[in-house]
Image 1 (cartoon, rainbow, N blue to C red):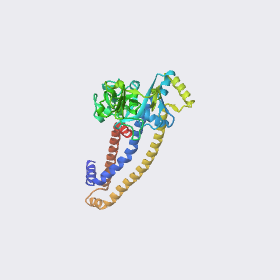
Image 2 (cartoon, rainbow, N blue to C red; image 1 turned 180 degrees about the horizontal axis):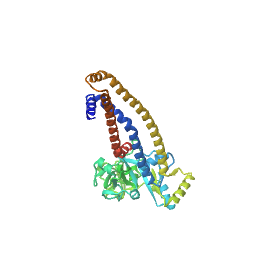
Image 3 (cartoon, one colour; image 1 turned 90 degrees about the vertical axis):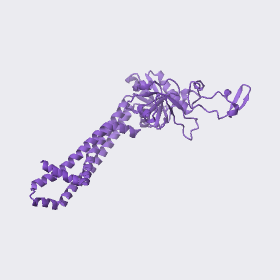
Image 4 (cartoon, helix red, strand yellow; image 1 turned 60 degrees about the vertical axis):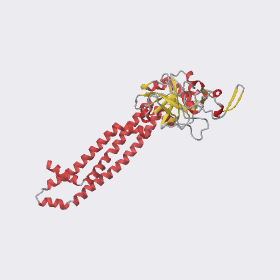
Length: 393
């Protein structure tokens, strides 16, 4: 038996190009359906776990999927925005907490989440170093954000500015990093967190200015002085950093209750209260919707699983074609080796031994292809979470 395997191995090694092609084909035939199953199942588990821990979401009427994905996974929001008084109105309805989410800005490629300190307790987020948010302008980084930006506690990050067509006055804000979150394996690792009022400052709904009575006229910031009045020009710009010296100068323009947010997490006291709230909003003619994230994710997963089934079916057809091609390669290989086989017979090689060598060659290729498929599936199973977050992020 050892001699048979040795002869088969030597042949496959000599014709390594053909052997590698056959092993790769068999590996793909087996690995693609298995790998797809792993990715879909782990992706479904990740989606379901985060959605199941979020009782209710409120946002503008429109696509429930867009609202759920932006609120849970910090995808760029596509729906209209809702005023903050939609959040404060819940205080009269006996819910445990309502957590606003402002998602319009980013820090580099990472979403800036304007929220409240209740969010950290709700998600069970803990700090690896530093402290939590204590005042305007401060931020806390998710673990992967800190690693990607190379910024630690005591450093600074700069928010994104508004678009070139933004006439509302949004501007980049230099924010001190006061804390780094411990890794949690969720979308929170890829986000930058600050107070919702800090997001409004970035949006231009609040400003801080220099004391223009102290501005040197030679600097060009003052147009004229009239007794106790000082007239300044547009060169007196808003601050881009909130410090101990200027924090008192920041003030909001308008009623904060009318300021926009993108969504809010609603935590009712119990299941009954949640059902009652949903009933009130379904019957309401306001331009807001209250939804259960787990129901939306379940519908999304049902679509994912149906697509997976079609892909598996298609890959099965491709696999059969590849298998037929592999069989054809083996058959043609044997036909091309007819003179070689005839020579072995003439020098005393038994027919059974020749058949055993050919069968061993096929067996070695099948075993090698199966081992590679199993190893790649196990590797994918360990890294699927990271790959899903990279693709999603």
